[in-house]
Amino acid sequence: MKIPQWARGPRAQLFGTGFIQVLFVAANTAFIAAYALLGNLLTAFAISWVWTYNVRRVVFGDNKDRLAYAVGAALGSVTGTVVANILL
Image (tube, one colour):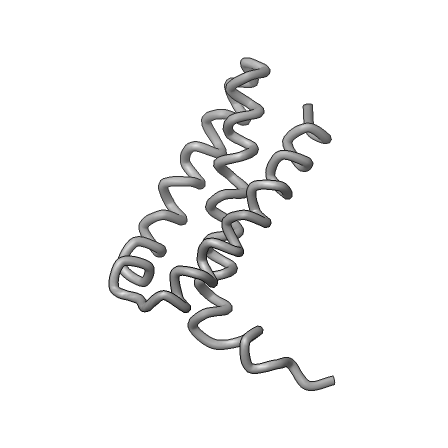
């Protein structure tokens, strides 16, 4: 099966890093609300680590780059919420 063009390359990387970063943000929010300090610590570190890879690519990208990042971030938010609540 051939992977479509939109699912590979720089925009796929933006989607992936947006997904991962906001997954950690959503999970971090759940851990804060539950006063789960270890989960809070680990996800806060992960948020900052992933952010260092994202910032330049999103700021200097075009609208399609921003869209790829935003869609990944939206799906990451839902996934992070589900994962954190499973862990809690």
